[in-house]
Length: 191
Image (cartoon, rainbow, N blue to C red; front, top):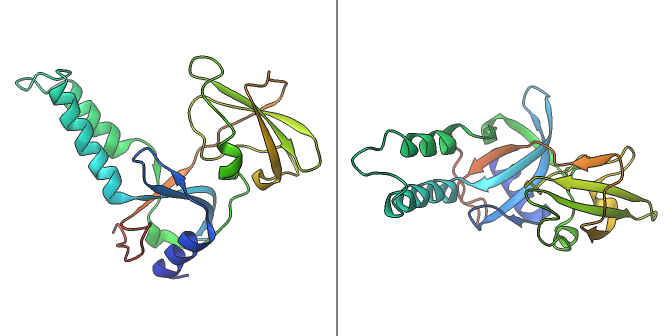
């Protein structure tokens, strides 16, 4: 697939979730041009991520977190976080995309409310065959490990804050692919 075909498919086949910028983000899987399979990719707006970084820089200065005369501590750490944190993949390195088996449908995610305890959210996922499995996360809700033989689209109901039974299926690491205008088309590849 060409870059524009990938973005067209993502925008038209994947239901978006809101990312940390409040913009639409799209969860899927992808194959890289060398054949490597990446099961968890989050397509996000590059400009929105940059704008969020700028807002955080400005907020840190206004709130007094940083001394404008001594930016040697907080400001460089904030820049480092926005530039280096997270796993990234370039659009031009992707060959094709498809649905991810590790995505819990947005309708089910909306059934989860708040933390179960500080920095931990637990919930039970009821599958389409009525089997129940425990899930939990510290703060990432984009992708989850799944019980063998199941994918996220088989979850028919969520029971928030259900006491955990072992095993607990945790959040799954993912790659972010930043693209300008992924929400509206007319994208620019981040080369």
